[in-house]
Structure formats: C-alpha cells, structure tokens
Length: 349
Length: 168
Image 1 (tube, chains in turn red, blue):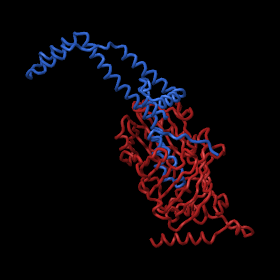
Image 2 (cartoon, one colour):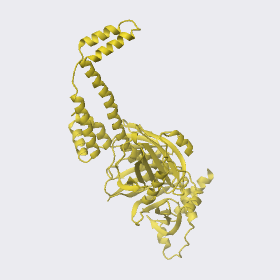
Image 3 (tube, helix red, strand yellow):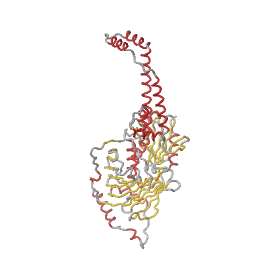
Image 4 (spheres, helix red, strand yellow):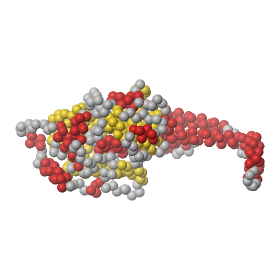
C-alpha cells in the first residue's frame, strides 16, 4: 500500500513539475524518444495509480453514419468509473457508475436503472507490455502536446489481426489522452480524446457510489450462464453441435465459453483472445432466432452474410445449417471476415 | 417504436386494439419493414382461416349428458369412451373439437414465431453487450466507449433502441 501511495505521489510531483511543457520544450535540446516498452508499462500501470476527471469526446463512423458523443469521465483507482453523458440529445443525462464490481446505468428519459457486471479493469498490469510488443508492431512516432500536456504518440500496426491505432499517452501519467483508429484506406473511423483533464490524488469515493433515483424502475442485466474454460466442456453443453476451432487467425486462442440467455434468446458464446484483444463467436439455433437483417450484405466463407460496423467493434452475421453465427471483434472488417470463414469451415459435418 | 415492440403489437394491430398513437407508430414501422409486413399478412391469413370456421355452440344436452356420466362411479371407462365416440358423431361437437385443435396448433406456432423475431431483435444487442464486457481485458479499449456501447445495448434490450445522431 505504501508503494502504491509512493507511486501516486511521485506521479503527482512529476505532474506539478511539468506545467506548460510545450513552452519548456521550445529551444531546449530534443530529448531522445522513450523506449516503446517503457511507455507501454507506464500506460498499463496507470489504472492502479492515477485518479482523473475530464471531458471526453468520442467520434465514430458507423457505416454511413458518424456520431459524436461528449461526456464527463471520472476514474478512480483501482477500477471505478463515472460517466455523465452530455450530448447528443439522445444520450444527454445518461449516467453510468461502475464501482469495479457492479455497473449502474440511469436512463432519465425512461426513469430506468439498469444494473449489470462491471466493465472496468483497474489493476495495473505493466507485465503485459511484453505481450503487446510480441503481438503487435509497436512504434514511437514522436512527441506531441495534447491539451497542454506532453504526450508520446504510440503507433500500433495492424498485422494479421489487430487494427491500425495511434494512442497519445500522457508521458507523465500514462493516461491515454487521445486514441485514433484508421481503416485500411487510412481514414479515421474512431477518435476518442479528452478536451480537458484534471488529475487528482484521490477523487471522492461518493462520486463512484450509485444512488437510485426515487421511483425509478430497476432492471438487472447480468451475464447469464456459468463460464467453461475448455472447448470440450462447451461442446458437451451445447445442442446442436458447435463450431469451436481451437485457434482463429493463427493467434486468437480459445479462452472461455458460456451459454448466454436473454428471454427467449440463447446462444453459445466462445471467446478468443490473442492476450490483447478479443474475438467473440456466438451460435444460436435458427429455430430459436430469426436471422437479424442488420448491416450491409457481404460474403463470408462463401456464404451470404451481414456486416455491421459499430465504428470500433465490427460484427459479421451469417446463417448455415440451422445455426445463426455471429463473430465480433475490434479488428478490420477484412480480418473479421477471415475469422468468420474459419469458424464456418470448422462447422461439424 | 422498435422492431421487437412492433412484432409484439401486430396481433393487437390486426384486431384494432391499439390506441391512435401506437397505431400510427406501427403504421410508420410497417411502411419501412418488409419482415413485419410479411408477418402481418401471415397473421391476417391465420385470422381469416379461424374466422371461416363455423361458430357453433354444442347443444346443452351434450354437457348435461357428460356431467351425468362424469358423476357416475369410477371404473366406467367403457361408457365414457362410448360417449366420446357418440359425441364426435355430432357435427357441432366435431366442429368445436376442430376449432380447439386449430387453436392448439396455431397459438404455439404464432408464439414461437414472435419469440424467434424477438430473439433476432435482441440478439445483436446481446452480442454487442457481451463482447463489450469481454473486451475489458483489452488494454487499449476505451472505457468510456465500452460504457456507451453497453448502455446503448441495455436501452435496446428494454425495447427502446437509440438511433445514433449525425455528428457535429
């Protein structure tokens, strides 16, 4: 605990010593760029050390639609988050509070509270830097000033998997201040940036405690189905037989499975990971679910499929042999189509 | 009104049981949704089929006779079977039984179809939500964007899908 507090104090001293860093840089000899591993370790350590609150702007291109969402984001170590949505009007007033174990969402237009599992990882994992360096082409592209803070620009190359990203990491704190993702043509499809940020030694815990508004309707959407850690167990639990290859795209390994339920809907879920990003495969008997006519028509594994672009996540849906399949991931569309083809080819005969 | 919400209201729409605002919303959705138009047409055909069946009441004597036989001591399987046989020889009882059989088949079929349509509607949201929750382990995943995706999916799962608005 003492080392954690020491780390926080050291970070804050660094912050205090770096006001208007751009001004200090003028005329000063250029400092050598840091090592990618060191930058990654600072970024991966940050969730365990840094509290912050700021205004974040997220712009996504979803197919033919672009949307910009603005919100107040507050983070408290180790894994507590509060989001207050400001615009556009369709999300204005929405509140999301995550205390690291449970998340709550208040939807004012419906006077509704939805609770569910936490979606925040608050543990500092600097050891994962090596995994990232092994799996991705990581480069330091330079230094840039973002909202008055000196950042190191990290470039992640899209290889066989993964996506083209640039991340502007606050050199002093390790907090990503800006993230960009580009498609195969080099066009930006996702941008997330802070237009203002303030760091704190200790944000008030009350900010991260949810108080249910009087009279609000409450609904719980928790993850259903016990997870299984092996393919054989998932295959044994599911009817009809599933397509669960042990490996996708040569690097995404099967990690866990589950049978998920929501009302009449149920699906076998298989999660794959390259230890950095995640691909998820869903399989539902067609007798239980009409085929969702969403997204644009594409061909996956020689079959008619639908492609839904959420800007950051992408979805491929197709139907074959009495099963509805869906593959999701934050990889380029062409790579996701390839993963869908591999799932389709592994279908039991 | 979402696709799932309209699917649930098609039968009531057909029976003119919706209030004006709901009916207007369903009309607007039907103008753009071929799947719902097809389902409405199918429901209309089932209704027409059921409506074409004769609306006959079994004679009171049938129930009086049945009650008298039911009140007899147990162990009268033979006479009960004989009563059933004689009852089905009467056209009114046969028509009522046929109607019951049609209902027993049509209602679960219609319900199963509505369940499948609802599952299609929520399925994509369940996929997005589950995938976003699993993406917590991605060190480059933006927590605010995960929060937006999950909260949008939650809203859709309670039947109020949010339509993204054009950016600035």
